[in-house]
Picture 1 (cartoon, rainbow, N blue to C red):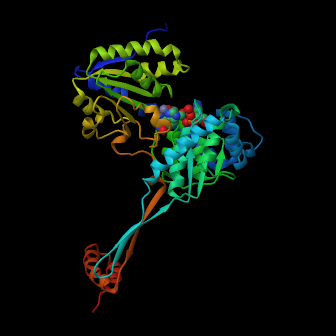
Picture 2 (picture 1 turned 180 degrees about the horizontal axis):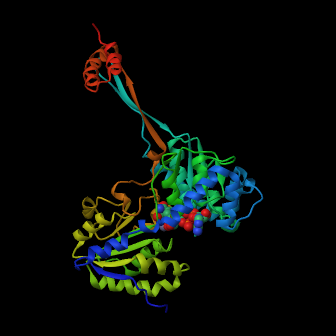
Picture 3 (picture 1 turned 90 degrees about the vertical axis):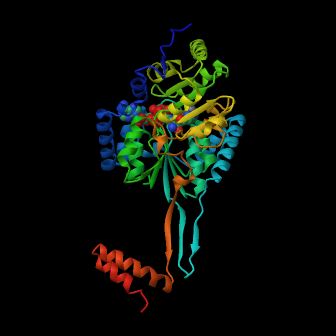
Length: 436
Ligand SMILES: NC(=O)c1ccc[n+]([C@@H]2O[C@H](COP(=O)([O-])OP(=O)(O)OC[C@H]3O[C@@H](n4cnc5c(N)ncnc54)[C@H](O)[C@@H]3O)[C@@H](O)[C@H]2O)c1
Ligand SMILES: N[C@H](CO)Cc1c[nH]c[nH+]1
Ligand SMILES: [Zn+2]
């Protein structure tokens, strides 16, 4: 039996609960000055020295030494080889997941639209895919073939012609499943680089890495800080930080199941966050006992322990309504409604990246193969952000066509407003089209 877990036990009604919760949720503070300075320095070096900086940082941070940038490029043939090398069972699982992700995302494709007014004026919106996007696939502490599918498939469904993937391969250890997933998803270029240097390369381009229009995908604090720094030079999807799970349980699910659901996100990272809310104090005790009994069986028990002891909590609430109020305050990346009637709670949930409904819907299924995207807003940003989707790879252009009659009518309105702004060239431009 390992040392008992020191996971926070809180009651939503205790007088200092709000302070405890704020402290638990604070992650922004981790992106401190030292990280910011290092990221700025890395970006500047990549801009100045291109491929040479990538080779140097890859040796320094990933322990991978290559003679030149050529050693960090994987061509299509290498991706196809990976697809052959993995086991038939893995190939089947990847294909099933890829197909489910693809068909879910097909529903998200936005189409151009237009309408015509009585005088022949046409208005609308033209939807086009981005030209070239960069996918960041994390690879520091774990490899994520599933993240390759989740990033690349929506881009391809949107019609992006060129998809550039970066993935660190610490000490040169290549994960064949990651490459096989890239092959299946139709990724066009793969570079084995990571961290802030990979983000900088995608944003500014180097001799080998093509400059992209938008960078998507999750990563650690260096990746997140770099994405924030290059925003404006390129688009970004969101700042996806450490994984999070919030479980709301009525106390009737097997405590071992809930313990494992909490572990499932804690095992990503020491900074990952797993929280359980339940109105049943005895159930919280039972889950705590399960956590203590099961943690010893985990391969990543050391990471899980730090995550649960520093950022985890088991919280007693009055009822499921109070649990929903707290859910909206936390705005978690993943919300599990492990209750008898999840539909009944749904109207009360306003902020969550993805909502897993019912006892038989563990978050892990969504991570791999349910279909919806697993790149989701974290750290409370579900208040204003949405899951990564096809819409992130499409952009909109407004369409305006004025008939002569339409221009004459609109010209009168525009003229008045332009003169009100003292912009007389605007006014005269509009007035030329007014019929006498
Ligand atoms: N939200 C999602 O959809 C999702 C999916 C998968 C993973 N994740 C999260 O992504 C994160 C992945 O992090 P990771 O570390 O495993 O991989 P990562 O690829 O994000 O980071 C590894 C890179 O970080 C850089 N780095 C590490 N230490 C550094 C240092 N001291 N100075 C400068 N650079 C340094 C290195 O360049 C290395 O290549 C985890 O937090 C995980 O929870 C999120
Ligand atoms: N839970 C992660 C997103 O927060 C995604 C993932 C990939 N593999 C396993 N899990
Ligand atoms: Zn996960």
